[in-house]
Length: 321
Length: 138
Ligand code: SF4
Ligand code: SF4
Image (cartoon, rainbow over all chains, first blue to last red; front, side):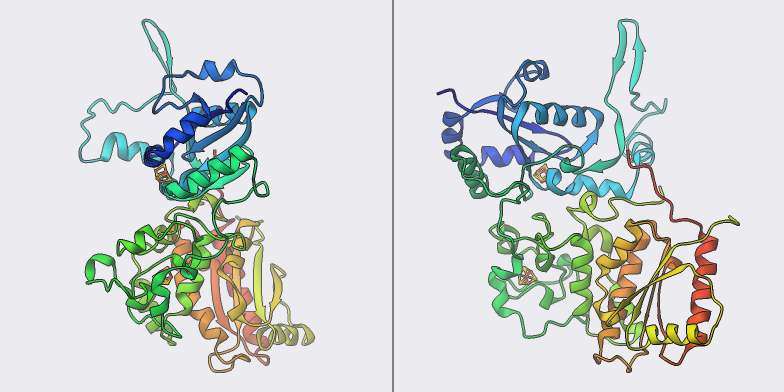
């Protein structure tokens, strides 16, 4: 029997998701053994035209990581959708927009202005910015359109499954690969991780008092963190209550609070708003001034509550630019 | 923007503010029809997701009215609303949603006048701000 064909593609991503696949260590040999890669730009030399030459649906599964930021990414995502039986959004960026999605607090013009003119390390006296079309002696050169907004993968194509995480942990990747190879799959649209909140399995939960109260919000570099105690109980923002379980608590075990890369559970539409609600309700103050004093001490609330999920949030982006 | 009629969603608590709005109606007080009222049992029940949903669905403003501090039917639901409110407004400003588009105030069952004044003031402010701008997302 022919081995199932697999594509692994990156869009607006950092490369960490590719790294996570390499981190499968010897398990990767099992994967390579069982499947035939038809596209994997970071590791193998295939061209888009190789994919175009395949029949519709011929690829068993495409794993796509990264958000959609450019016209080329949208184009390849659509091509892979057409050629694939299954599409898996791989990692937080494809799933929710991820860290690159925080750029939705800005827009294309501001980003270009900073990157090509204002950034202190830039020397660009002719003020050159990338153009979609440039005519040179040899002909016309093109670059993909850079969108105003970062999109999640499912805002651009139909997605069958989501592998959450920044990056997805090796055990979840292997479980997913095995489920796909054996056809033992959950309902379409499922996020391949337990549907409960991180606090549920967090080992610091036992230290959580009956009623957590926050009187002062601190940042991780400002205090010596107690490695046993719940972060919220130490006045440190931890997005665990509004985040899906299944990551293996890598951050928590490294004494760093959760930043929400697994996204919300299925009962939540907007991870940031949900966390805001949870955080506000443990603030120990009743007067307007006292409440404001505590909440004003949160540096960049939107940035922290939507660290990974801005493009997937209800508002998706800053509305006035 | 003379012709702009803002769409405002009003979340009113069942026990005080909804009754206050009702009193204003029974007394035949005149106030602008821009506020679409959603009755909730308590301001403490207003999940910040509701406010985002309103903006996502095309509202230009959100008005939250509840019982005065100390008067909450459920003891401290309104304090919970207050705790969320300031943080939510700060966060919404980062999304480009101006502070005057979201308002929390206290209106008791007998304060028909205050209800009318609050609605008037809110409508006036959101009219000045204009429609909630929507960036083209491409
Ligand atoms: S999910 Fe994390 S590791 Fe993967 S591309 Fe995005 S930022 Fe990188
Ligand atoms: S808030 Fe963070 S530290 Fe506390 S129990 Fe939840 S995940 Fe663990």
